[in-house]
Length: 277
Image (tube, rainbow, N blue to C red; front, side):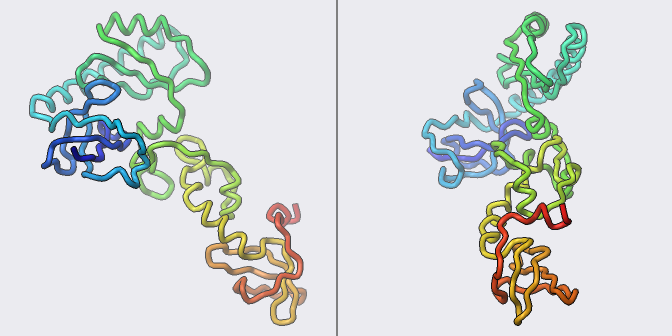
């Protein structure tokens, strides 16, 4: 029994599956058996579980490589999902539900229809579920998601010019806070450090721990250092380069290597005072 990475649905998360099929190739469409019943996804590659972040042993299974009949069924399901999207939006207005519909999914075997939506608070949608169930004659699930999940589903281009990381590879959203932007000396302008979802950029977390590690090796802004018998104050630092921008009493400003100076007075939290604030 081999293990394989499979991208669920068209642009879903990548998960580990087991399979007995020896000849799967990248981008092959597969029928899957998982906790949702039968579904479909795209084969990525064979793998071992090391480095995937999965410690469980009971992995879902690749049922088979999709046949032409399976692919026609998937295409038909996608057409019906679009129709379901339009119908659900109309019914949300009829029932006066303050909900934003994001996506609709039919399971491969059409035993369940899932409607993903965002809302500002908790919504009582029991009457809407009953109406949808009578309309589509199948099990209905309305699932409220967050704005980050919405961006992951819809996708888009980030400020870096690349496809959103949450769309491509992020499986779970880790906590991101403003401290990470401060540590990396980034502008705290919300427009500069926020993603399409309106939340702090996920990439703020990528380099944070590297900055944090190197930050402890050099004097921070506001510290006084001695360089070639002159004492100056650190105005700014380049943590990754390990250099300091130092102002001296005679008005000159130098960029020097942090290892070439001696700390006279160390300040641990001076970033807020750099501009006299």
